[in-house]
Image 1 (cartoon, helix red, strand yellow):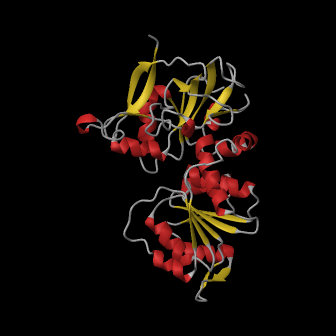
Image 2 (cartoon, one colour):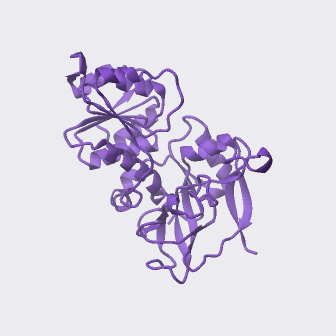
Image 3 (cartoon, helix red, strand yellow):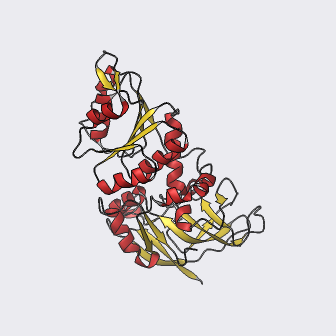
Length: 347
């Protein structure tokens, strides 16, 4: 029996790299040699839990990790159309029949080989050209999340936008907003290095919310508007929450002009301190953004076209042989922006 290495979690705060059987593709499947896989906040959530839903006897069930893989096709089932050995592909983790890859399903992308069940180009995988590094291609899934957020905002070129949180999703949203032609995009965060990255990927201005008053700075940057009661507020059209903190929601609702939008893409931390009543003073529209109903492969050609800009989001490349260090970085607040685990050569 051929085996391979796979990363999973079954104890809170730790990962295990275990030997599992190397899969053999069926007639409708392809076998992917994983070449890079990003680490996401969802991976961190499973690490904190130490597994997935409770199994018999109340124990946590080990969860294979990783839902941001990019790799190379090595075997193709007889009934698969449009794919061949050697194709470089990105994956839709939500298309797996056995459950979402790396998010509680039977499969994880943080492994040496990944079976793509019922492989269909444009549904479960998309091919990308040789000139794109696997690590950059592995950004496809989170950038689809960021793209859906921007699509949900319906941002127009004349709009003025602030993005809270300069992690991968917030920075991805910033890139998509600027590629969409949006006039002015501000990014707010508390970590100076992240704000530098925001400027590097195209933000028009940044706010260090640990030392600056966000409302005052938005007034300086976006001019003056009014809320539903006629009180002066920043002329900001769209607030994007890619941080998930109560302080962001309260800042947005307190600062909003009449008719502004608040788009939530971050997983929200539970809090009793959120004042949604403040939305009445602006008739603010609250929009939730979840996943990527259509965007998963819509973003692929644009990531290819603008790969140097997206590459700036990666703060750490860590080999799979050091997977524990990679997840330790991801678990430590402020230690890394985007960690991508690499497998062998990155050509």
